[in-house]
Image (cartoon, rainbow over all chains, first blue to last red; front, side, top):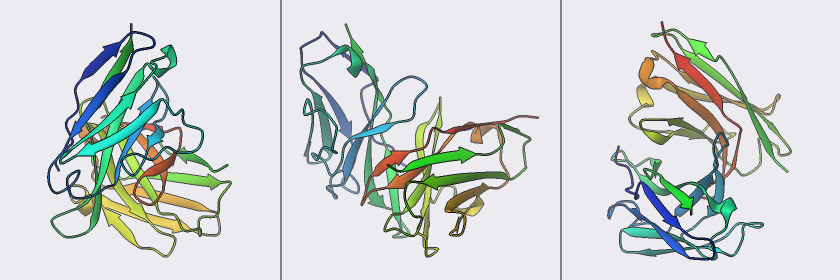
Length: 114
Length: 117
C-alpha cells in the first residue's frame, strides 16, 4: 500500500509561519478532496486539525489552514506557538484496486518550535 | 462528547489472534458513523486497518484483509477487532477511531500490543 510523502521535520520560530507538504498520487490526493490532517503530541492520540482539504473542526485554532494543488496537499501553521510542537500526519481517502474504500496516511512530520 | 476506550492484551505470542474491544460512550453505535481501527508503529507510522458500520458493512485494508475481522455489538455499544496469525510486525499501538464523512474525528487513547515469544 502506498503512503503519502511528508518531510521528516520542519522548524520555525514563535510567530512565524510554516508549511508541511503531503505528496500523493493521482489516485488519492489528486483525485479526491478528502485530505485530512492530524496533530499528535508525545504519548497522546492524534487529533483532527483539518478535514476535506481546508475545513477546520470546531475548536481548532484558525492559525491552522489547509490547501491542495494537484497531488500535493499542504498544512500551514501561522503565528507559530510552543504548543504547536508535535508530529503532524496527513491522510487521504481513496479506493483500492478492488474498488473498496481505503485510507492512506502520510509518513509524518515533526514540527519543532525553536 | 463521544469517547472511545480500547481494551485488550498488552502482550501476546506470535501466531495467535489479537482481539481488541472499543467501548463507545457519548454516542450510539447505530448513529450514522463508521468506526475504524488504525495502528501506529515506530517503523511504518500510521496504518488504517479497516472500518465497520453498525449494519455490518466493512472495508478492510487490502494488505491485511486476509487476517482481519471487525464486528459490532449493538447491545454493548462496542466495536471489536480481530487480527489473526500475528507476528512481531503487528506490534503497535491500536487506536479505535470514529469516522467523519472521509476523515477521523475522534480517537481513543490507544492500546499498545506487543507480539513476542
